[in-house]
Length: 208
Image (spheres, rainbow, N blue to C red):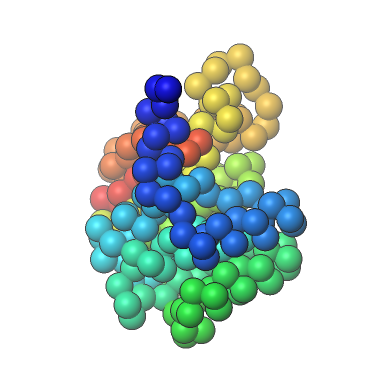
């Protein structure tokens, strides 16, 4: 049986028991999580840039949180924001099972934009956006302010379920994703972008 390349890449690095358990809890509460391939890439990226300070917008069940922390330097700290208290609750379970010291993370339950607007300028190595696409315009603006030069912005699920590449799709979420991509692509003095087909698409942009 021939396995298509996307499926093969998603299963190339199998998830361990902690990630499987976190994913199971996420399904139970309806959380939207990163795919296995995306999680592996996030861990790789955090390691590649020796990330010390990371912001994740959209905690879900904590799978992305775990993957990022696994890739970051040992003294690194991660701030994860989610408006759903249930997501924060189950993410804490995942981090406890992993044995991650409480001082290495902050899980904040609050409206995303309220928190992002208060985070420090040019203090972060990586910002991962997994929030409502309709908030992306503001989230990208804050990410630009928060990232250091050479820091990386990541927008998860950028393909929008294959809708973004289809000009006939005009729902608000798809339009917001498409506009965010256009804004980043055209801001050549601010961002150096790339789009990779992992999960439902990852838009990466390094801050110049």
